[in-house]
Image (cartoon, rainbow, N blue to C red; front, side, top):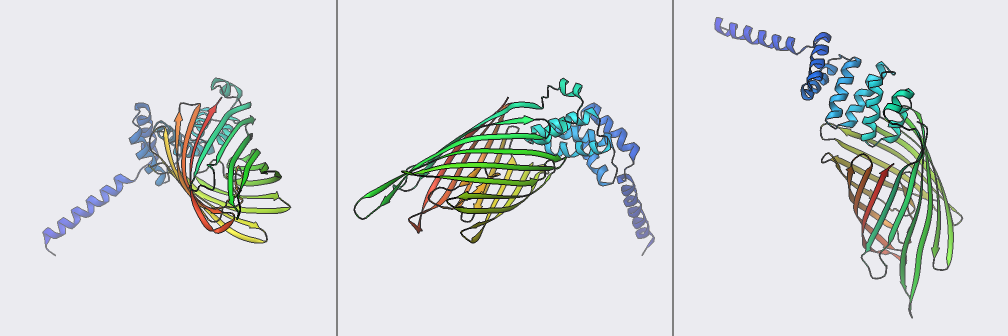
Length: 392
């Protein structure tokens, strides 16, 4: 190797070491620079430097607060809550942390987590933020569902529900709902057609208790009163579940038992997912269920994926695989027990957030149905659902 080559190698090595030295951050620089970015509202630089500092194991309360506030103003409420949770671990009494944790969870749609941290505030702070932890009626929810049955032997099913939620302190919430389903079934007989009027009235109650900062217990009761022409039956379901509450990692287990026509239908399930990670603000969840019915068992799998497409809109896609007959979904709020079994369902939901008080959603779904008279034949059904939630 000649002298010139040696000089080039030395220069390259020196430059590399210099760049490595410049990339190594220290506490004083991170503290002063992020504080300057915070005061000047330079949120992009603050986030880039703050995230790099944490990767280099530089971590302190004010850094987490500044990062959380930067993500909050960028409307990435899940990441904002993540950083404010870390700031809370440094100091659980800081009013700035508690206030922004509350709003981060509230705007991320995690009202139970928001209420839990509101309970950690002192009375003066709650009063200044107009936070009330006792509300007999916290929100009102209504849905209407019209389904187009792709066969002349079935009228188009219709379903509607109305419910309201109540809050009793920072840890306890109750949701109650009534609903009705209606459809007419035509059964072709050798001499004439027979018509079955299928109606179902339901009452549903879900109690949620926040046991810890990241653990929630849920218990539900679902009553169904079904009329098939002149015969009537009553069905009773009990449900219990445990799930994460305020984490980016979603995990849960649940179980339900339903008594129907002297038969017990048992369902056991596990939930896993990830909530709004990365710059794209996405979430993914998988729900694996085992149903035991008539001494036989079968598996049902539900996959959901959502993405934020603008400030006020979220788009979610979902699919359910398996025989859905007597399957209960969403903490046993919906029960697939129509006379014709559903063997596949897939659809998408668009959520609109109008201000702080009103949420709207529109859902379209495709369903593959079996004729209960002969399970070898099926038909297609298309579902159109609209819903509204008003926070009082």
